[in-house]
Image 1 (cartoon, one colour):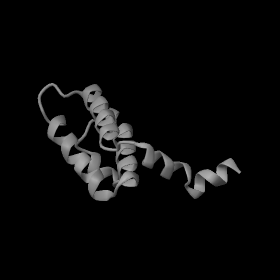
Image 2 (tube, one colour):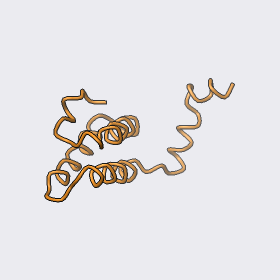
Image 3 (cartoon, rainbow, N blue to C red):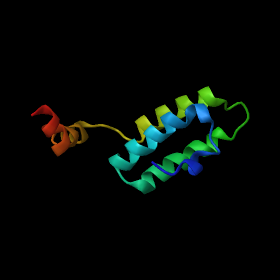
Length: 88
């Protein structure tokens, strides 16, 4: 997750979801992909009428769509060492 100061311009009520989106996208691809998520989110969050609820839901939906979990991705997640250790 980026340092907290990177999220200061976004609504406090949405920061937990935004942080999870950043974590998910960093894991899915890389930090540059997570930064693209933040750029896209900020472009819309600064518009009139974009309250905390809107920004939170936008962050959730945007992160989901930027990290498509197709069958290959699901398989990668299932064979991770950490997951296999938890199961054992």
